[in-house]
Picture 1: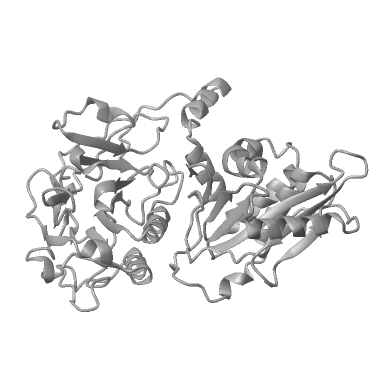
Picture 2 (picture 1 turned 90 degrees about the horizontal axis):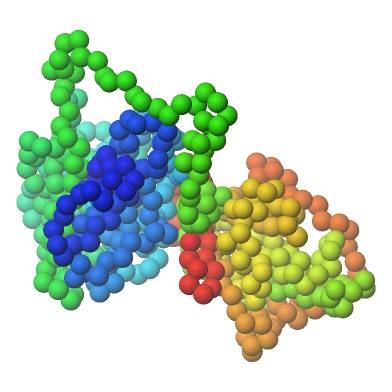
Length: 478
């Protein structure tokens, strides 16, 4: 269900049938008492053993993983293109949706997206073999509709609305507004999920909502056949001509903000973010993905802790790879600085549109990046090696593709990690180098590597950057 208009935690007051699991993603708290708008709600039979992927979900977007069925369900509401989202969103809603769909496709599992996307696609985005016959097939495609069609093309998705292969009546209008009718509520699947479909239909509109429900029947692997129902439940609005003469909208009640204490109180109410949300806000979204490039990083320091210490960094991309390097570490000569500098060297070299798997045996480095970076960033990186960590964050911000950090055991017989270790030792034996020069601001950094051939990516624009890109070993996934 989309557009629930529920505030955070308000769903606790709802009654729902026994044997069902409820998950809700509402918009963040604001300092007024006006309608929060938006919000999505998912009600799932407990026998399906669903779990919410909090790392992929957020306001107006829920990603459910059905473990027994090898399926991901995406419940989404994307506000209209002209609607401002900056007042409540920690990310651009449309970019968050597209990057989530791109990343989920990499899992190899079935993907089903149901929701109100506020996109007009006419008859685009369908199967290569069956032409869509949508009720608004004769109408213009909107800019977001064009982007949705491109998303389907780039990542192997198909819009089911208007596909007669899955039954009659699924090309109907789904939205009924005073200004007209449209198809904006979509069911979108990948090839894996497509093989499980029994039927799909769009129900007749009723008197309670200005949207029609979409119903998808599936062959279930471990249960009786499953049925998925999606609806934007926003109540019907009266046309402007039917409004009561002289009626005025009730004034919006807001928290006072006249004093510094008032403003601090409002900031405190808005600042309670989880670690994934903090990382998302710091690093930005993913808008590209590819077959991962695996790179090993290591640091070394001779006479560590002594006045005559010399530190090096080693980066191993593969046997005889031109990017393999051994370098002396600038400034402080410590093993930790060598570990951090090695990862910085990788990010300086890597194509920003290629997925990276970076292997390191430094728990200190990985924890700082994937756990402590929001707080250290707020403190302006006053921590040891803060100059290097600051630039690592800068490089992660401008990346389009994700970076997966994987912790390995040092000196455990891993040939690639041993190769990086040997390069780091070579770097430590090199002559001393001048002090580290920080990177220029992001706007001045080159991004020329994006014109290389990129596999399997979406042409989503990189405007707002809010989705997290990082994970570390030990089950830490953000």
